Length: 453
Ligand SMILES: NC(=O)c1ccc[n+]([C@@H]2O[C@H](COP(=O)([O-])OP(=O)(O)OC[C@H]3O[C@@H](n4cnc5c(N)ncnc54)[C@H](O)[C@@H]3O)[C@@H](O)[C@H]2O)c1
Image (tube, protein in one colour):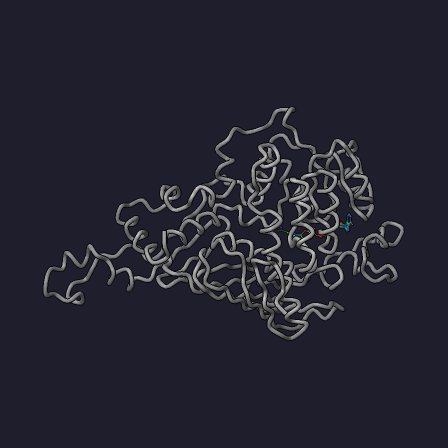
């Protein structure tokens, strides 16, 4: 379907009363359909023969959340946990039982024959190395976002996935949601006309929201493998703040853009089939949380997406504010020539521009008859706002994302967010930091995957 014809098709679909799930087969070619759709239709695997043995590397907040979700998928068993802080290993044994193998050294996990797949939920500066080592050891990998700490690291992960022919999924779970799938379907059907702009933000206003996590009372270089944590970054004496609030420091974290913008890129690229922006510019500052952190707490990013065969040219504006007095919230809105949609994981709110719909409605024009001006007769209008809401009992994006991962392992099928996709989502987020710190716009080639000097 061409972009010009897409709006006409959308109106036709409205008049035929088939807008909704039933238009899916017509508007998405088979190869564009998310793998989840293909796999959910297949049989469930829960027998012992199909059991997937899982290990967790990085048993902090997200590692435990990931594991708890993963274990809801039938036929998945946790066999091992790795962390650098003893308290987290004790906590893992308390939750998952004394039988699980625990270690401070992830390489011991990778040597184990009974491990099929690993979750990598360490801080960002360890994602690339553990993922590559795990794939080289033949393990399937679910790596948390952002896929890498630095934009130059992406190639190694993409190549490791190709070379080892293993399943690798990045953990921006939102794009597996029913909400993102509905938005993709609506955009392709021309529901908002021609896309020209998108915006997203994350607003927070609390110490924990701004990464001031509690530091355990027993934190020390005895209970923590501090040297290992540093990876290749500069040696320094044990610092509990750096270890437990790693997001605040450039050596380990990726700033608000790597932490949060990356989710919005993943969703946006999934919905639009985009490979990414070509121009990236960020500005912001450290406005409030002056606790020694090295990264801004308010950041805005502007992005230029060129006209491609997948989508028209459009602009994206993203914002994070960690001292936002409005409310804790997040938001992704896509704007087209004829309407807009607010995209959530469990809901899409489509708002159509009525003046367009009314003047362009061929049925209304016929009924008016010759010689009459359209102003002379009022029309009956379809609703300008349509809310698509998931059914009660929906297990959510996080479950869907893990379901997609484990099904790909069992069926040797594709995942929705592989290394190439993960690289393309991470790159513009990571380049926001470079733009901010270097005070310049950055050009990125999303096809060749390189920064243009
Ligand atoms: N997908 C999401 O919605 C989402 C949400 C939150 C965090 N995350 C991502 O998950 C990752 C972890 O974030 P978090 O909030 O759980 O952080 P966290 O600090 O709570 O947990 C990280 C854990 O990794 C451990 N660790 C550090 N280096 C390690 C290594 N080399 N080997 C083994 N363990 C190591 C730490 O001891 C810690 O327990 C980050 O990459 C973050 O961006 C994703």
